[in-house]
Image (cartoon, rainbow, N blue to C red; front, side):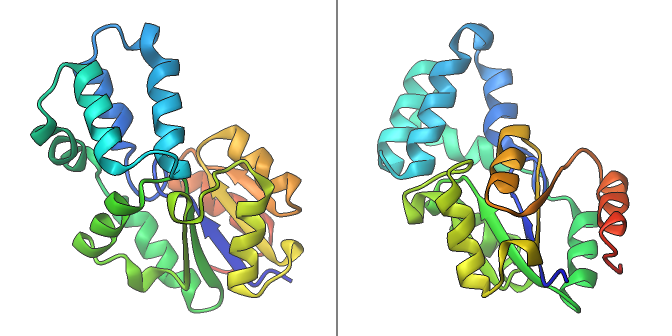
Length: 192
């Protein structure tokens, strides 16, 4: 029986502002994509500080340090329809946020958009010093939610993270649209 549903943030609950902003700022992004991905993974794992991350992004994108986060923040549009769905799900299921993210930025987003109320547990990768698809971060989330892998569902917009959820024993779905998500949840007898 399903007791908990876990959601990713970037690309699911909110737009992936980092990559949207980079596409606008970095003309040769395809050539530098692995650099920016590696940088993202370092901050998400907590291997570098927020200051070091912003300095590296500013330097490589030829942007001012002062504009990096404010401009990325503006690109993070929240999926209001999905939040409404989460509110409905929260009446019957425990809801977890499981995201690879910069802890400082996520705290600001949670506060600004008043998102705390949607989640029973929030696992932000840089705080725990591990990232998806590492099995341990899924297991940590389940531990905090006090559920077994077979009692949870995980939703993410990146296939390798969905595979990571499956590897941890969690029924996992690739997020593409709200409608597809509703269909996926119904296939698991989730009542919305």
